[in-house]
Length: 634
Ligand code: F6R
Image (cartoon, rainbow, N blue to C red; front, side, top):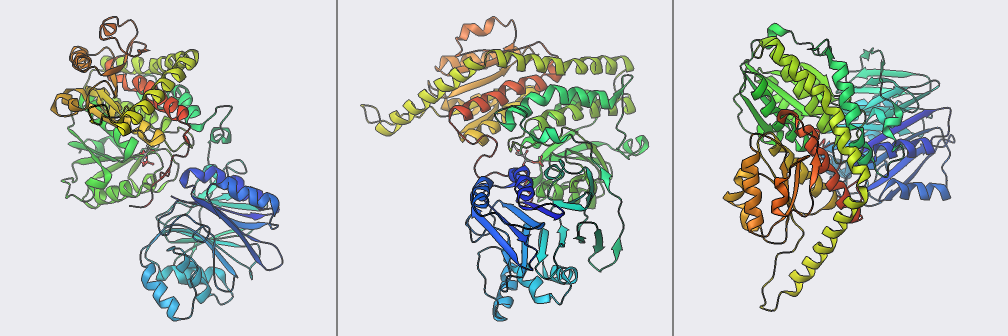
């Protein structure tokens, strides 16, 4: 939700800001802007509606000179996406500029007071109060003015400020929205996420809540809200900057889908040593873990689906009962968690507001908390008692793919790790499992190789759907001769059973997110309890039916769909001849894999179906409408 980038140093700032914002565009992309100190004690602002390329075009025609600047890419919360509401915002004397990520909850009250003091507001945003407050308190020291202004604010923020009277300086602060400092040589950076400046430096300092940082080209000074100096050593990030680039793929989503086998294989190698699982960064002792009696998993969206798979995994490998909850529901109930509960919070970004709130609630109730996060140093990672990083590298496409399978890999390894501590399975059994898991990345690669070979057929199938979809719409709007409206074709039903049921939800979510086509995921056994009413010759039904103990049941469900003329697209184990009896539209074959690990393989065709359809429909695959990568507002 909004990305911030700041630079101060020996280079011209404009293009660095644009490049940095492009890396952060996944956080929001409805408008963008930058404010630059041009060295003549003035601040120049350029901002515009739409994507960063619009801003880039303007700046190509009228470049802005200067070596200290702050930039912003927006996901609107208060005020429509427009030039006026785009950041940076200026004070009435145009001396101070502010960019902000978060929500100022008391902005109405602050605005009223400021207006009564003669301040003129130019936007509908909550952010604008910040710049007027800083201007109000500015008495020749920007850091003090920001510190004073923060005391008036209620809500969440990562904020960066520049002032024309203090050239070369950026002052920034955070409260519940991420902010990271990048330490360079005679230059320093500031961003919402490390990947934005990774090309320039991998030495970073993560700011904590209520800290203020003052950056110049050769100094980084951190203080707390009371003005006390804070000393913190930079940490080194080992992400490869190339991971944040498309690397020859048409879209980040496709690149990230293709990265999955190598990421999972690297996770396995990192975490498994001599057929023993270890999590070095997990600072929770085995004896502490022995006090737990049950596990609660909280997460949102795709990470929630990973949590649902986690339930099947933990219940199979360990003795614990497991509950899974969407974070936004968990936090507003009165969940019965306590000292005997392990709460696992799963979050790619580590910044999702609802998951963070759920984690805090769990801690308040005395539960032991472990997070599974991808973004290093993220808030959820830092606030949980133990963290396990997925190390999947930066995930840039808004629709999550590689983070999902990396989360699943960690959940498998965690369950086996627990099993090694609690000895639920014999040593031999857990070794067999680990061995089987080690082969899964190669099976995933087989699916991707098959896609590469059959890419044209996949595109043709997506085109076929597109044609039927539009024919269906025409039929719907013109009605048939009897005057009845027929349901349009544009609907997908995803069915799965047992451990593949969460993938049905995830497949449907992927399609909805990037192609805007309605899709529902269901446990196949539930179909008769409602969704079967939707089946006629129109919707496409994606049936996840690999070889498993529930295959026969799944096959019966598929026949029920066939009996109602449904269009069947099954995902089956290679060599399944029976499936052809139901005359599927086309069959996706995957290699044979142990049922328990099959979600890691069945998810790939689901991700690719969503990708191909969104591409056929010409949608903006990496940056779908209305979405943002990390949801830091409730
Ligand atoms: C789906 C997607 C979202 C996220 C959800 C949680 O493709 O990306 O549903 O999974 O917003 O985000 P994290 O994992 O960052 O907490």
